[in-house]
Amino acid sequence: MNNNKKFIFYLSLTLILGVMIGAYFSHILLKRLPSLNGNKLGAIVNLISEKYVDSISVDQLMEKAIPNIISGLDPHSVYIPASDLEAVNEDLEGSFSGIGIQFSIMNDTVSVVSVITGGPSEKVGIMPGDRIISINDSVFVGKNITNERVMKKLRGKEGSTVKLGIKRRSSHTVLVYNIKRGEIPVNSVDVAYPVQPSIGYVKISKFGSNTYNEFVAALAKLRAQKCSSFIIDLRGNPGGFLDASINMVNEFLPQGRLIVYTQGKTMPRSDAVSTGSGSFQSNQVVVLLDEFSASSSEIFAGAIQDNDRGLIIGRRSYGKGLVQQQYQLADGSALRLTIARYYTPSGRCIQKDYVMGDQKDYEDDIMNRYLHGEFDSKDSIKLNKKKEFKTLTGRKVYGGGGIMPDIFVPRESDGVNSYYNSLVNSSLLYQFCFEYADKHRQALKQFKNYRQLQVYLNGQDLVDQLADFAHERGVRRRPIYLEMSRALLEVQTEAYIARNILGDEAFYPIFMQDDQTLSQAINAIKTKQALNLSLKAQNVRRSK
Image (cartoon, rainbow, N blue to C red; front, side):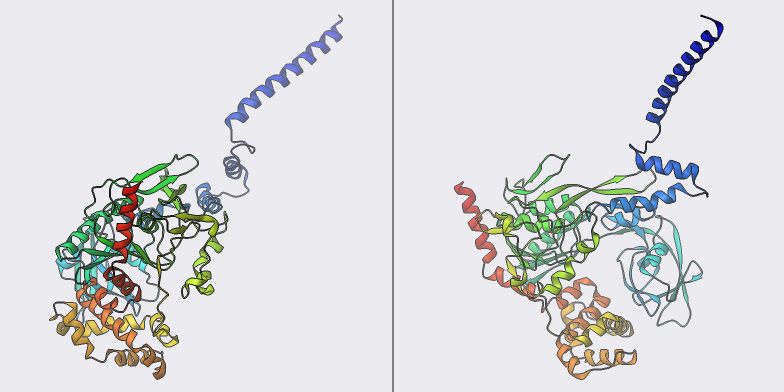
């Protein structure tokens, strides 16, 4: 082989080996780097970070991208930024650190509605009716004040101090208070009281970490007041912790009853079964629901209904049958991801229909129900007969769209008209009640219970005073509509004034006195409808 041929041979061999070695190392490198065909999101972010024409924050880009990705899933999976996580979790936790007041923003000013007993504000002398006009020496009044801004200013690390400037009706000068923040309990049982002799009423606003303990304490208090039947009001309750709901239902069920089960693609079926340790297994029980009762509220109601342990009264519930689990991320954010569906004891999933990624139609469902007349007529409700199930005694129930009550009660519209709506929507009803209570606080404080206070308020012509108050602020008096709403406005003004003086323990007994759903529940207990159903279920259970 001459020199030229040798050169060409070795050159060709070198090129071939070079291509093979290059291909090998390219393969190894591509396996290590994000691939546009594999981890596409990671590859795109890297390309933007390295090649984009301008400097850009990858973290900010991801914060915008992640919610868009999650929005393509079911309506209840959600990404929670680190900046929002504490506030999101706080509502269901047992406590937070703050100054211990309930407030309302009126006339661009933060007004103290009530002071939590034993809390930091009470200890330094903050009083209901006080107006907060400065925080930490900065003026804090005006149209840009929001509930979120107020909470951000007043809440903080336990033991830290906040300085408030207070305007009080009885003082000509601004009062200054330095308040050390402390632990403030988050209550989920709003009130518990006897609505009639032997009938106890419990209102629950959410299912949090302390709800079960609060609930049992409330039932025990009512039992001590000679109550043997219970009305559990879950209207407007959006849900919360699954375990709280399970533990609460367990109080009413005999041993061995299925409460709920969960199941998902990677989550095998898990049953929650009653232990028989409940202290209220023989007591009559009624549950109140409406279209805003969701999630854990529906688990509670579904277990009572499917086991025929009691009656459900009100309107069809929200229809949330998905279970979320929260995953903490390294930067302090979290992903609340749907991992399973839950099923009531009869086997039904009450999750209403949704289209992946279509949030708007899902969110419009409640309004569509209203427009369709579902809140006013049981006949307007379209049940999915293809998803029929049976309760323990053989009653028909349906899946695919919330819990349908055993006794339907339409929305209450007596007294509701355009004039009434103007008073409510403008917040003038609440402002009048707050200012009336504040102006007459010394006189009203002499009454020790809501009955005494309501007798006094009945003689004060509150509705006409409210109409004058509203007229001066732009809502003109409309005599015919005012008379149509008078009875409703009398109850509500008395209730809100009572809340400002004596708290929720006075508010609810007054506010609920003409509530039609509650009246139906009381009648169902007096006629033993819930008890007879429960006894029938016991007999069915024994015969199996």
